[in-house]
Length: 487
Ligand SMILES: [Zn+2]
Image 1 (cartoon, helix red, strand yellow):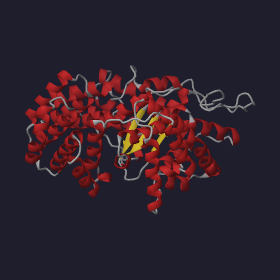
Image 2: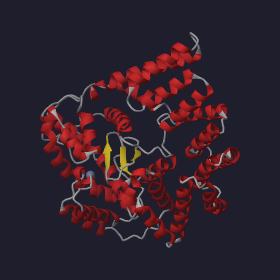
Image 3: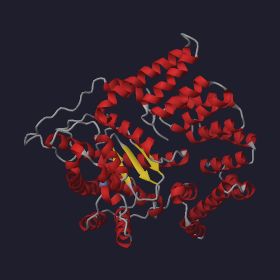
Image 4: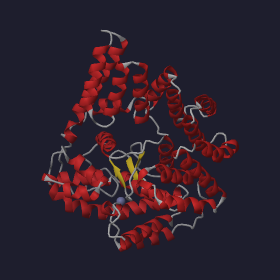
């Protein structure tokens, strides 16, 4: 679950950005040259970094196949937060996102936003390995590598911020395409990007290893994952994408090995949630479905008790996705009987119930679970969807208004609310909710146009109209403040 600020993030950003000016060039003196990880001569304020991070994530939502799966979102954010809690120099909240992609990649953009490709689950044989990639990315953020890169460029050849953010994001999300697309003033910095990232990799490894160990994971997992990557690039003609943005020369691997050896050896018991998350990604998401899934299920079904449990869960998911609901129920029921509070199982059984049109039983189970796990976002989203499928629109709408208020940056809530309002025949609410899905993807013009239509539909001076108009003002302000970064 993501931690939400008390005020909406958008409102905070809007108010902070009113004070923000474009970064001012200031020549570094000998004394003010930045130590690694310090902000002594930073030209980008934390607020500007947060704004660029917020805008980055909107771009990423619009361009990348993000996985909006409440269980997986919750899992990677819990794991990420566990690591962040052991990092130094944390200046912004962290958020972790998952992209459905068969290429191994991970990258950190501004403001504590870390993107992981689903393939990482396929190539991480332990949770410690996955955590090692995340700890490395977290370290790029705490050491301000990307921010310092922008600042350095600004010193060498002052360029307009406009366009730079989009190009750099493209390069991180799709390194091969991105490198080719760098144009204009940015073409000259291509080589700088390559050499600059190389000089930062070892620092991110070193700091990342410390975070990994402090958080209770196996430090050896970092060199093990790197070895895995090195093997991938040796035996395949295509370089894993992650190696474009995180180059892996031989000395990086040997350094990581030497450093990991300085930490006490640690046997980390596998986490059940990691196994569930891996199985869920491999069975449910298109980029990852292949014969490997079947191999892994077989391996798990002959493994430890935790692996067997994950394999049974995976079988139930596969059956459910094949619409073999009765069989899926037979497989899943014993698990749910034994672990009635387990959200992975409750979520899977909800889908089966909905598939069989047994809405009453799905709703009752979710309502019960929510009594024990109040405000659990996975259960809330599931319940809202169950109400929607059962045509209980007013219950769905009530729940979703509360959910979107508490989780304004979760696209799931707004998407469901759009659908519910449509079914209820409330076009103004439908347009307003749809506008939020557009704003979350940085499409402010479209969002404002839809909100204006919603505003024109309702009674003059009504509370609804005030609400829509206030939101239009907020979005206009946000759009105005972001113009410097993406025009
Ligand atoms: Zn890196």
